[in-house]
Amino acid sequence: QVHLVESGGGLVQAGGSLRLSCAAFGSIFSGDVMGWYRQTPGKQRELVARITSGGSTNYADSVKGRFTISGYNAKNTMYLQMNSLKPEDTAVYYCNMYRAGMNFWGKGTLVTVSS
Image (cartoon, rainbow, N blue to C red; front, side):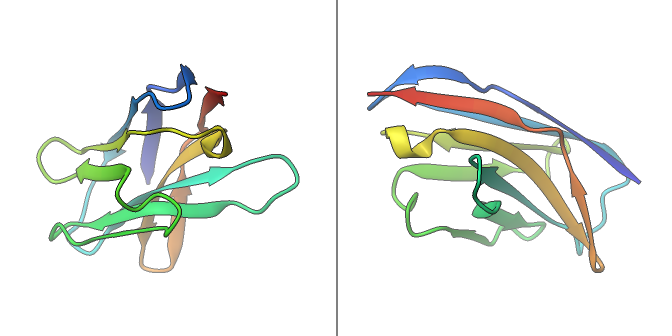
């Protein structure tokens, strides 16, 4: 089992920055993939970015060039640096770990971007 805890959400003006953190408690294996998803009311949860234990990353087109995912290997902590935030980035952001067909989720952290 893995327990994921997000932090770093909050209110920011458009054009500002936030950094989200996800602490993973429990065993981490080399095949695990960690990522960030987000969800707004009435919409499906969508992938924002993910990172493998080897450091490979991929991003949603809507955040490329603005968001950076990092961490994971060093201290079982993953980060999402979000720059040039837009009002459409407003959502609850969830930390995710994918392992052998199973998904583990944090409780989420709210990011609100005001125009």
